[in-house]
Image 1 (cartoon, rainbow over the protein chains, first blue to last red):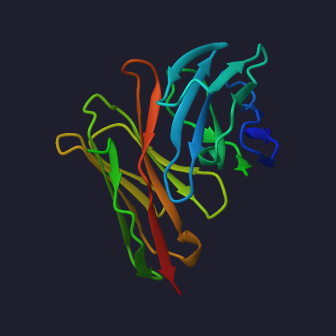
Image 2 (image 1 turned 90 degrees about the horizontal axis):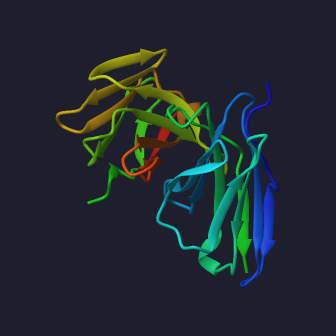
Image 3 (image 1 turned 45 degrees about the horizontal axis):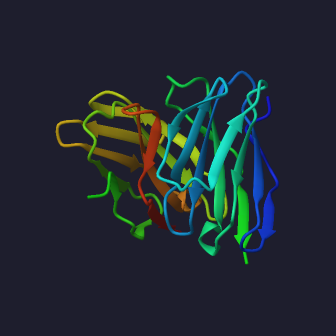
Length: 113
Length: 112
């Protein structure tokens, strides 16, 4: 079975632009979480989605938004990019919102110039 | 106070030794704890989870949890150079919605 997949692998944007990152969870998993990891720090929780509904939100500005589709894949959108948004964006898959065991995808490396 | 704290290291141990990684957490409501291994430039990889006080062993890895002291640790026996990585401690919480708090990670170097 395929693990968590994310696209694209790498992305370069300029300040003020918008970006969309994509994630497909492990087959049978219905919950997806998004994290931002800046170099030298641990992952910072952004969102959790389960059954297309937001179930958790971290301390990120409204420029960050996400959604989950009927096939349980998910998109993370970031508007008005800032230099500080440069990071590794991780998607994690869990069976459901009651299960805490998360499996991470390979991540998307976003560079904002 | 950070919600999940780890010593950033680096922690250096010789090959074959026991590496001891520590983590403290502030949210007493947290019921489960996870250790992830992250190689440079890669995503976190789940090593172990622990839910109950005491020890949990899986191969060369042992996780220890003390809820009274709000302390979680990971022991790696017979450390190998391939164990050199950053180890992340994580504590999920369902209070006020779901979120998982990660520590900043401890860098481990195993010298051959």
